Length: 311
Length: 320
Image 1 (cartoon, helix red, strand yellow):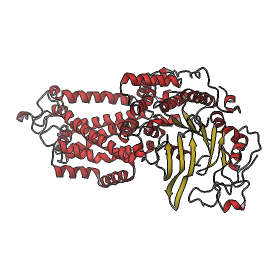
Image 2 (cartoon, chains in turn green, purple; image 1 turned 90 degrees about the vertical axis):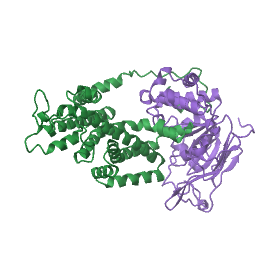
Image 3 (cartoon, chains in turn green, brown; image 1 turned 180 degrees about the vertical axis):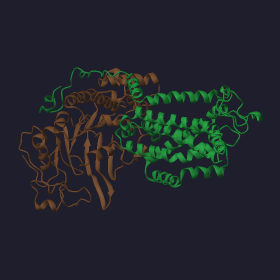
């Protein structure tokens, strides 16, 4: 199989080779290469391992929150108001005598659900819109592009406030508002990734074997743009959480007496000056820890998926 | 080989023009030729001459601006490209891509890539039957069965090329367009893949349209050659004759530029003419042609036969 075979001036047709061409040696790449990458990333970036562990803790607490809490998070106790952290009340009590530790623990579920709900909603809608815009181009791309520009023209948090104020304070509306302000990021990312791949040979090949546009979009293009989108989603979780807490903090989110971190920080903020620092501190710390977890996790995920963009 | 039967593929005055600022780009201009069943036709020309556009027209991924495409005698050029996927002819006209890395989806295994046309075009839905057919195709292109469950990045260049060929053959096409199928491969692998292609043609009786700028490859595999320049076919003839006695000055220059050519190199001076709004009364090659004369600017030559099988589009063909 040297080059001489090609450059002989023997006229066509070429004599049919009797034996099948010798099969090239199979590459020795083992399927466990993915695990090796995972181990490599973990060893280079131990923080993401810590983050994965913390996420597991958060998920566990979210699932079993009410059973883990030592006190009823709603029960007020007139005899035990504004108590500093102690053995009985690890995080102290608030102005109504409610156990702050129990409220922080029970609050994990609500905060996580709001963040997850808005991210899932924004990511699925945004991905589909971005896929269509990037693939079909033309008018579809123009309309979605301008719509997203319009959304981005607002200060996003103010937009979220306006949406909640207009629709009313409810958990569902916070999820919608948070999803809407996050939508442009997913649309833009999905659109640009799709636009790059639209001209790839495998898209033309898919057309050639009779694949319809929806099939090309969801079977051929979606799996290829999913990695960057999943990184975006995990980085976005922390932001969505902060957003929900922020809305609650300014009174446009979850309504009292629900145990929600942002609301608890807001309720406790006025007590800091009088010395009861523990009321806003612990829900604030929980919020910080959760956001940190998601950001570290997103960084780790990005390193795993795209080593080129490694920070 | 040229029995006076109905051609498998016939192009009649096929044109594709793209609107560009200040006019229209004539990518494919008034191209007519026919390919008989069982023939292997080479289409050569420099990059940008319209080869790729012509293949997208024949594979019906783009609509021609004017002209006809007849396949098995049926007008398939008039069917909008968007509807062509549902036509029975979709299975019969397939293409092997130039770059097997680019044309295989990085997230789809070799088996699934080959299975897609089996499911969509042959309408085989039964899992076991699809798997059997995929194994059969892998065997046909000598792809080790181990490779089927791998993703493209886990395969070697030659294996990827085999997957691409297996996918193109999966729908049992009668016309296979090979778009420089070896250009992206290592030289040693090129020879193996070319042998495989020649072998497949003889075993399956598929008709090949072999698009390439590698004249050696064309010489090796094709019985007839079409030379394209700036959207037009400038010379067509039996491979042996065309390579031995090129008549068009462009073909001569092309052959002299090939590595290992026995004749002195004929340099082409200057740039090719612009394909935007070409002057209909000037030869496309004028300005670059080593033997251009004033007549070449008065009327454009038409493709005219010099012998029954050999045609050339030049006012002053080299007659040996």
